[in-house]
Image (tube, rainbow, N blue to C red; front, side):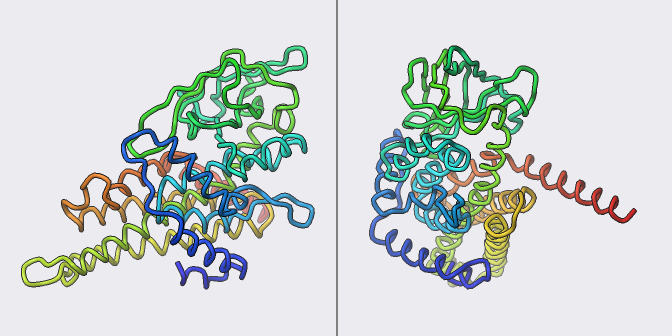
Amino acid sequence: MDATLELPFFESEHRRLHADLSGWLESNLDDASAGHGDPGPAVRTLVRELASGGWLSYAVPQMHDDVRRLDVRTVCLMREALAYRSGLADVAFAMQGLGSLPIALFGSDELRRRYLSEVTSGTTVAAFAISEEGAGSDIAGITTVAREERGHWIIDGRKAWISNAPIAGLFVVFARTEEGAGSKGLSAFAVDGGSDGMRVEPVAVSAPHPIGTVEFDAVRLPADRLIGSRGDGFKIAMVTLDHFRATVGAAAVGFARRALSEALTWVGARTVGDRKLADYDLTRERLADMAVDVDAATLLVYRAAWMVDRVAGRHSRETSMAKLYATEAAQRVVDSAVQLLGARGVVDESPVERLYREVRPLRIYEGTSEIQKLIIARDLLATAETKGGDET
């Protein structure tokens, strides 16, 4: 990581922040894991610890030159460092940002005053409620509805696979406000956890993660809980995901770096016959492949983050490339680490075994690898068509 910071993607404040974060992590964060129990209490604790260190403020857009923006390179650096130490700490940090970014960028001043200080202080856990059983990557298929009634909004529907659902005090909920309008008929709302008519069902998954389904049965909201304008939901979702997609790749890089570090330590100590495991050509070949994957993923992630921060416009192709390659590469690197460690690589709750479970969901959430390929190809074809038209 230290060599990465010397790349031209970073300014001096990024290097200072990373040095400060590294010192704080060394003193305050062990390899955190919820084991196989309820991860909710562990995430609540991590949110409070990150808040006490002042780190959650970096997950929420701040004012710069009268414009509220998120520094994506900072979020990437933090997610990589946190994921290296603890996948659960990465989740705790990332979801505070993802679950509040729509309010920070598009919400009214009142919504910002109501929620953002609670998110950064760690007193409220945030959630981003967009996915449904029949509408995962295709959010145009959302069936949760919101209707206006006497100065209020009434929400009915069911959300699935929602991170932090069992513990969240704030949900950003995407619902249909226009019939038959596809992606153009969506709007976003701020909903308090525990509102009348809400029911949360926890879902157990392979890696420790507070996740669940959320049912809305005539949940009544004041009119001012609408985020942005009616019908802005698709735009809000896409801008949010464009900001955070590269950061998923950064978390993947953190997992991969840890797996490579564990593998290097093991092969340098393990003796097979009369030689160190590191002395075998097949071991060296595998280590080389792992190192190339880590570095290539790193470059794609921080290129994408730099573009989001510094170049005007949307950068869906670059952020999708970063997430696609980094998450697929991290899966390969972690799998190689398991193979090199042999039986020790599958011992329950060992670092590499935990990484093996933690890295897999990254290829699914915030857009599957297959969806990232479609986004990349669509942008390539659109660019080629535009260039062709200019030449004629």
